[in-house]
Image 1: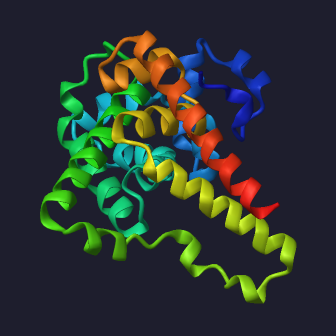
Image 2: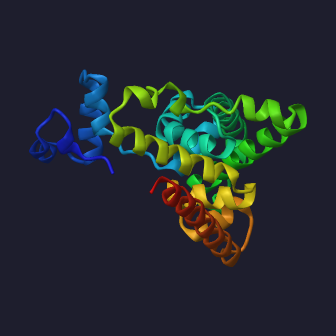
Length: 231
């Protein structure tokens, strides 16, 4: 909600006007910096942003992108397995979102609706890559963000071990099939509720729970093998 105390004028001055609306008009006539003016305006909800995007508001597009770009990349990176494809998937997901925002009817939250777009875009990209690349070629290009980290020889032993464990976890997640990996990423990394995940994936809440149970059990077994081998 708009709060006059966040603006330049003393909120007690409201009493000098017949209505808050007249006070608001007075504020509009003043010169504010962009930061000052933003503090005078209500923060739009995700749903309001989608409605504005559907009407062609470029500012709403920018705001929605700023809110969700990092979250979208986290999901995409875990689902497609490498940075280049994740960036492509995120770009495509935002384009699809902006083009179809007018179709958002509020049956689910804007966040759930957007995550569905991101998830489906990532899964479509993976299927396309599978069709176009041989298994060997796919494995050969599965670089990760960890590739830019210093080699283990340059790191202290503790740091190298943590980095190796992190990479083992990433590899274990990547080995999950699509349906289990998607549920795990949305639940464990993005912290979506079972209900939200069910809407994103179009499945029952019970199915979400069973897939998440399987994914966690599988990852625990994989990490046990690794930690046992290290010891």
